[in-house]
Every structure is written in C-alpha cells, then in structure tokens.
Amino acid sequence: MRCPFCTHESSQVKDSRPSEDGAAIRRRRQCEGCGARFTTFERVQLRDLTVVKKDGKREPFEQAKLIAAIGHSCRKRDITEGQIERLVNSIQRQLETQGDEVKAHAIGEAVMDGLKALDSVAYIRFASVYRDFKEAGDFAEIAGSVDDE
Image (tube, rainbow, N blue to C red; front, side, top):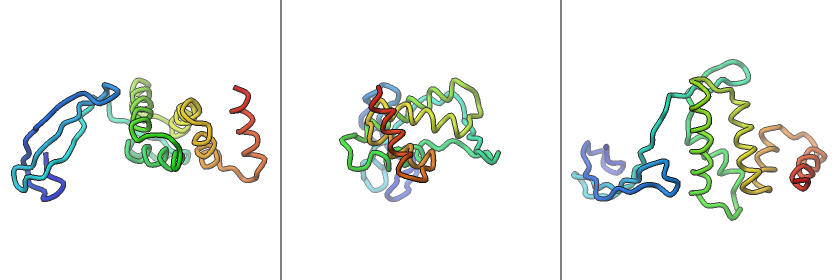
C-alpha cells in the first residue's frame, strides 16, 4: 500500500478489525519510509459497476462521488459519516446484485429510499436536486409525502 504522505511503496499493518457495519476491514498502517500512520478500508467487491446516465453515456461507479452527493444533503444534520458510509455500502451491495450495469435513475431512487428512512430533511434536500425542483410547490409536495408516512 502506497503511503499517502510520502508515496513510499511499502507499509506495515499495525491493526486490523471489522468496520462498524461488518462490510469492510479497517486496517491501521504505518509507512516504512516516513513512519506516518494512516487507515485503509478493504471490502468485497462483487463486480465492477458501470453507471448508465440519462443520455446513454457510461462511466464507472464511484463510491466517493455518491458519498459526496449524500454528504451535501446531510450537511448540518445530526448524521455521522459512519451512517452515510453504511448507507452507501448498502446501496452499492444492492446494485452489485443487480448486474454489471446500473441506470443512474436506480441509484438516485435507492438514495432517496435510504435518506427517507435516515433523515427527512436530507431526503428533501436530495430530492430537490435529484428531481430538479423548479418552484416552492415541489418542496411542499415532497414534504407532504414525508409527513404521510
């Protein structure tokens, strides 16, 4: 594993343990070059996912991109990074069982479902961007759907 600080090629594992959700192994490492410590996560990847966009373009699935999008919706909410990571891992595992290619729409809907269960404000924030709200009535409609449940 390359050191993120000095780019030395070799590091030593100091500690390994399962992550909170058990979907990954957390490894604490120490660089053999500069001695810096850093953490890596290792998880099972069932297959390489390709995202099919609305316009038909294809691109590789990027977990970091999904974490960032969900993170924007959860900003200033009482939601931990761990909760976001568990949600993203759950979505990714769900998508990996469906095949090699997944439509962007399916990812958006999975995020909406997950955020609806996690935090209603984050759900509405995500929905406003994902569904491209144009007027205040759009917010009222989605807020009403949250209140109904």
